[in-house]
Image 1 (cartoon, helix red, strand yellow):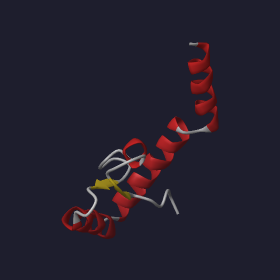
Image 2: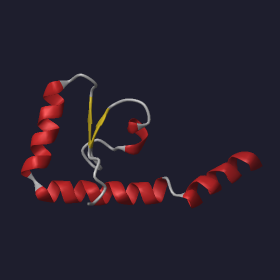
Image 3: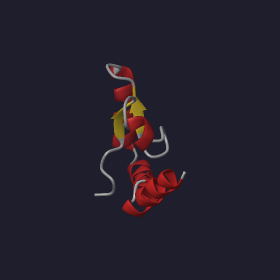
Image 4: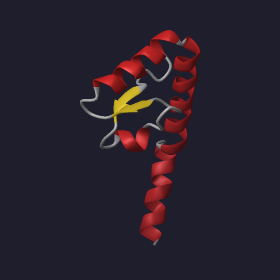
Amino acid sequence: NICAQKIASGMGGNLELVIDKQTGFLVSPGNVDQLEVALTNLILSESLRKQMGLAGQKRIVQEFSVEKMVAEYERLFRG
């Protein structure tokens, strides 16, 4: 299962994690039409699911790894 989450609400931390239409789909809370389009696109395209999954996995490793977070904290503390 390659980075399973590909649809998220467009609010909170999801806006930092998901790049809309690249690593997944961001849908406005309560917008059923956006959710339907996102689900339909993913259901109909295995290649899109794989592409978004791999892109999302790569983003998580590059941007949210422990090493990256430690480096960012060190940068902040050093001023």
